[in-house]
Image (tube, rainbow, N blue to C red; front, side, top):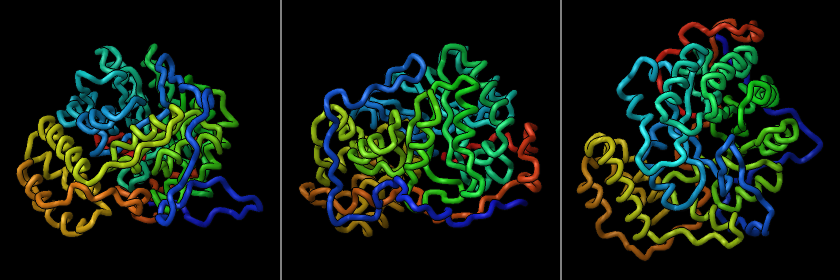
Length: 411
């Protein structure tokens, strides 16, 4: 098994554009709201997205109930969790259900994962032919071991000819439905591919690109390097969306002002905090963001989320999966450690309500919790790749086993 080497980024005489420190909790990060006409809608093919905010696809999170909840707080583009192209083609029941949209969703945006252009093309043809989607995003940023060790996910951009074949298959099958791709800066600092991936996307007809400003070796560690977003924007004609460390509404404005990107992708910042999209709408419309809700309202939102999740997936499986989300909602409040322990026993909606009984509904949202990471924060890694992968980067062949029908963990 080949492993990509992780070393510190080369030094620079200039200060890089970086996201604010997510661990900082002493003072609020103040960013003036948008000025009239300062920002424009981002157009992804025929889709007009305003505010220019996209929900990042996250495995086990951005299912229909969560998208429905986030959408209730404001406009934007809300993308499904990652669906494997081969699983769709082979009619895998779980993948088919995950790819479903609710009757109120418009536009319908789906993220697709695939390595074999045949599966990708066929999956896109089916999705478009059935009138199921209005937008397809392709995942080339998934950094998890089970994906990269087979040459998939974040490993694919290191082989630009293979990347081009996959993107060409998707765009060719999509017709008038816009295709975008999302990727990382590269496998590691020594294997940077962000600029070449952007060029492939533009040349093959993508409507826009999204860049998670970390390498696969970084996983979700440290600060996102927004200077990479700026460099990508300067190199392309198509819209560029920046992803990484949007914890508060002001971060989105700051990223766009510092990098010139056309929009932002919000991931971990909205976990347990779907009202972040309301705050984003506020600042892009030129008004200060409304304050986060007190604990009583947070619990009401959480219970609504749980109710919709139970209706979509069935109560017991839904509530078992919901335990981590309940912990995200209550993180930072007094007694949250005790609550997390209670949530580990939750099996039903009644259990969840009982676990929240006796909480003080007037307790304000803790400022210190706004920039505390939720979800993935597992340090760095040495990226696993197929044997000999780095010796054949000009190869456009599909790596053996890379398109097994698995669902990944996002990028």
